[in-house]
Amino acid sequence: MRCPHCDGPVSADAWFCVACGHQLADAAAISAPTPDAPDGERATATVTIGSEPAPVAAVPLAVEVVDGPDVGAQAYLPHGLGRVGASPQADLHLTDPAVSRQHVELRALADGILAVDLDSKNGVFADGVRVREARLPPTGLVRLGPRTTLRVTRADPAATAKGPRHPAFDAFVTEHAPLHRSLELLTRVAPQDGTVLLLGETGTGKEVLARALHEASTRAAGPYVVVDCGAVAPALLESQLFGHRRGAFTSAVDDQLGAFEAADGGTVFLDEIGELPVDLQPKLLRALEARTVRRLGEVTDRRVDVRFVAATHRDLSEMMAAGTFRADLYYRLAVIRVDVPPLRARPEDIPRLAERFVADLSGGARALAPDAYAVLSQYDWPGNARELRNVLERAVAVTARPRIHAQDLFEDAAPGPLSFADAKNKVVNAFERRYATALLARHHGNVSAAAKEAGLSRPALYALLRRTGAPQP
Image (cartoon, rainbow, N blue to C red; front, side):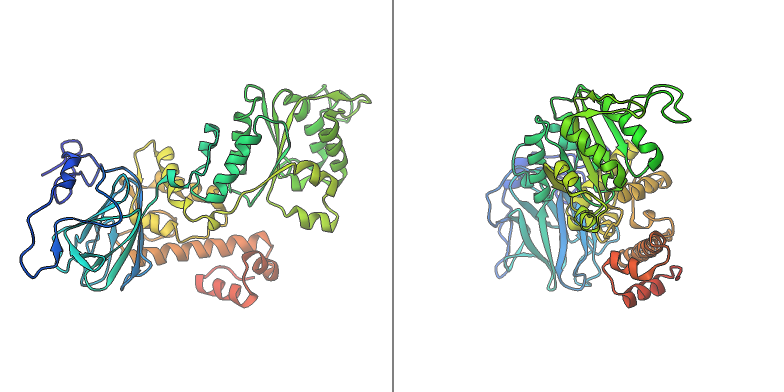
């Protein structure tokens, strides 16, 4: 039997298309028991563990091997439906010889998970009982044969939502509970005019939060002006922020508005505020406190009505101690402070971010294969979500197949059919080489400084360079 919508293969009992998820039979059939097993067999048609039968739901599932020869292997099933087995075509490919080629099918239910034995040789077990079908709670264990145990978890976005937030913040994809609380805080303060300081590494999404804060505010109809304090030459930054009068300096041939005047009635976002020169910091402090600016070449102040949002990847506490950032400016900026954790501290966000990026970049024409989800989840992502997007943008551009696999993710990962372990090792090695090369480049070959940033000892960093073949200083 084939799916009438996409001609793809259907599940073992003809309920769903494995390719597109289309439901082929009435969901009520889930509750129908099958005949009793022969005497002496500990098999049942349906076993419910921790929940009553429920309708099928399209909720993502996370699957991880927690015991057995493939311990640590994992897969992300974005549509809540997938298969585990020894076949390379399985969504989670296992090497355990006791696992059948197509061993078990996993489906998300409205209040749990359904595991269906696909006529495997060595059986599916739940709570020590061999089953044909098992209804598990939202996080449950199921054993395949004598050795392999899976932990299956519903990755339900609604499960982590702790409270209300403005729709503008939906652009910031996260399952991380502390970040949900930060989004709730930003929703509460958005209608106010308090200055907000966003702290976090480059690429964590501070720009997305700043834009969402503006869109959720009462100033949403006003202008939104961005000034990257690290991208403008120090000699030009004062003019960019405060404006200038004609003749104020050699190239000032006309009067020009500064960012603060241009943002009147709206929001100005000061990105990389940690790069602001020390001699400009008192002038910014005065603008924050008095809501007035003075153009270069003028002697009178102009009143501005703006909301200030600032962000930096720098440690401002260290900069204050070193005397390179004024403490009074910091406290004026940090009326509301939000820390944005790096992607490595919230690995639960990687699958959903990857899914969103691929869908956006391909217009829905591409999807990630389970081996790609697994490899992406292994990384520390020093460039955070920005680096993840860049990697996926390249993969979408160069991959002709509908599904992107692990070997498609990095330029120096060899193409062709690979086992899960080989594909993962190849891509991890490519990542480590790129990471080590970029790390040393940022510190101009200074191994001590590079090792400190990476959280490694000098010998460990040298070992990483030798293992990956990265250029050594």
